[in-house]
Amino acid sequence: QLQLHILRRRVCILDRDLLKPSTEEAKSSCLKSPEEVCINQRMAGLRNRIEEKIGGGILEKFCQLRDETSGPVMMPPLPDSKFIDVLPQDVVLEGANVQEKEHQDAYEAEVKLYRCFEQLKRNPMLVIHQLQFTHEQYSEFLPEHGKCSRKNCKRPEEHSCHKGAKEVEGECDFVVVGNCYVAVFEVKGVSCQDTEEDSLRFRGSCSSALEQRKRMTDLIESIDPSVTIYDFTVFPNLSRKIVDEKYRSDGNLLFCEDLSRFTEWFDEKIPTTDSISDMDKMKRCLLGLWFIDSENKWESTFSACSLSRCISDIDSKLKRALVTRKLVDEAKQDEQQQQQQGKRRKLKKPKEEGNYPENREMVAAPDVFKQHLDIRCLSQDQLDVFQSDAKFLWVEGAAGSGKTIAMLGKIIDLVNTTTKRALVMVAGNSDSPAAQRHVELLDSVSIRCEKMYYSYSGIDGDLTDKLDKACHTLSEQLDKSTSKVVLLVMFHTLVRNMHRLFAKFDHLFVDDYQTLTDFIRTDTRNEPNCTDNIITEGLLPIVQNSVTNSTSLWVLCDGGQSARDNHYRQFNRQPAVTGVLDNFRNQFINSRKVLSVNLRNTHEISAVLSVIREHYDQMDSTGRG
Image (cartoon, rainbow, N blue to C red; front, side, top):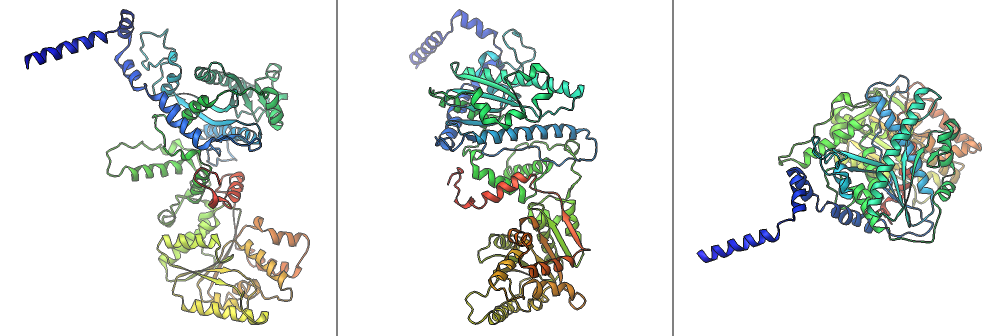
């Protein structure tokens, strides 16, 4: 045992001597602080994680080669706005609102350039939006930048930066990776009103953008010193005509005139070439830096790179009315608390109330919305609709203004607090997605909603017989129903004595009234001799005979979405139907509410969703399909 101990001792001494550094290495090592040595050891595999695990994974899964006309690969596939608050327009902004307005202007300027990149037809091309990196991550690519985070560093001549490891080192608005080049674009949202203050802001923006461009080009050169690099600053809200001559002639500055002809400008400044370099390493590194967070963590499925996931996230936020940063932060805090239940982890402290921008048009939602619909706030107009006790009410609002949400909150409140019954009517076919969403949502809050259909298809006889039989069948179904909420889907709108069936309910809600009018136009075209429709034989008598019946009627309408009715009015077709529709609408002239706040934030997002939803079922998790 003693000999074995001596042998082990000799081996340890031998290992120590073999691993002993040279005199220069020892001297260098002595100068390093324990903190710096620890950082070097911890970061040994950071670049590999950024380049191979993250960047390589994204490149393989989402950045496959496309044909020449498909356009560039955009990361993220949709612009991600973090500044969504609606600020006051009629007052001078103060405090956090001023900074918020600057962020909004900058983001809107970036979206303009984002749309320009989408129109380019040059491939292969990768466009990365909002790339941000920490001091630690940046130093992994440029070791000479200095990994020391100590402010009392003893070697300031070697360490040019003393930021903390997790502090943001820099950001880049857009990085474009082509077949043999990389282009850097910094976007500034400043506008100019010919004042000295605006001129100072413009010059300051030019100076700061130049520093950001330099920081980014240094990073790119560290990845591949041989690559061709272009760098530009973009002012989408400024005209070249109003700036000084020295800025006007600067080829690295873009103005609104250049964006109006961006494809031509891009071909002039970044000419095409037949030479092709292997840019995969560059793409892996930049994609990895873009996706990794400040804590050097990342989501392993790379869902943020999926178009379908981005659309789903936006749709979810809109349905939950997460339309302010305060609400988004509160929702994240709740999700963290749910995920960390039973775990001993310290949660991030939420921002104080005063640190958020002012949103005078948004108010706290009543408990019924929070508990049953997961909605934390409403517009003031929505709250007015919900709290209204009007027997007859016409609610007008654009898509996304929250008409249906206000209606559902009212229905849930009525069912939970009274014994009254409600009938919800929509126009559609047997598999109408809007009707199905209403049923699923009410079922999810333990409110039994029975769905019924009105149609005379497949019924024998002349039109009069068909209408009588269809109404009789529906009457029998309603008599047998014990549900407090009935959803009636109108596949046809020609009816007889439908108002008698409506009188069986305490409340009648008509959702998407504009679709109902389009159905009336179609049914009248098919049966021009019939004047009995859902208005004349159903809704209008409810309002006109309000003294003899107790049924209330609320109508939710977005006239801008009515395609056929607007067309018929424009060319004066079916004037009798137009007169009936106008007469019914005029019954609500003194009880009308307009929802003016669009909870989808922008018309652009609303338009995108209306198109994408048609194909969403065919899209897979990668955004293809």
